[in-house]
Each structure stands twice: as C-alpha cells, then as structure tokens.
Length: 86
Image 1 (cartoon, rainbow, N blue to C red):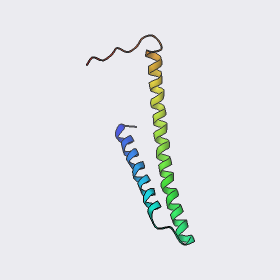
Image 2: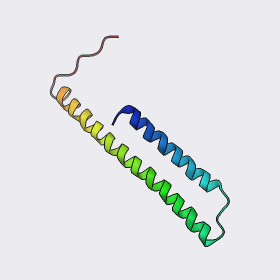
Image 3: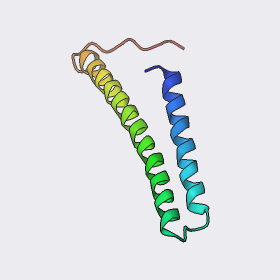
Image 4: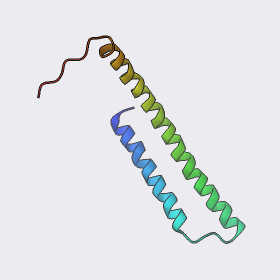
C-alpha cells in the first residue's frame, strides 16, 4: 500500500468519525423506525471504520516485521548501519 493510499484511508476514517459525531449531536430518535434507521446508519459507519482500521493495522504489522528484521540484521548482528552525515 502506498503512502498516498494510507493517507486517503486515514482521511476517510476521520471523515467517518466526524459523521458519527454529527449523528450523536442530532435530535434523538423518537420512534422505533427512526431508532432503527439511526442504528443501522451508525453500524454502517462503524463497520467501514473498523474495516479500514484493520487494513491499516495489517499494513503496520508488515512494517513492524520489516523494521524488526532490519534491527536484527544490522544492530543485533554486530554490523550497525553507518551513520548518515549531515
């Protein structure tokens, strides 16, 4: 997943969370029909947020694995990477 794709997903999550806050600030539902529509809308937003967060978590786990392998290969093997000159 590219950096741009990750940023797009993060922005989508932030937008969905904002929609949930807007739902919370609206007048409370008064009838069973209104409650059911509101509940279903909330679930759909929460499910999309959860799906995106799972994708991002998986991507982060891959990144952590790569970083761990790098640390093991270079720092724990006694061959640290050369320091960058400024």
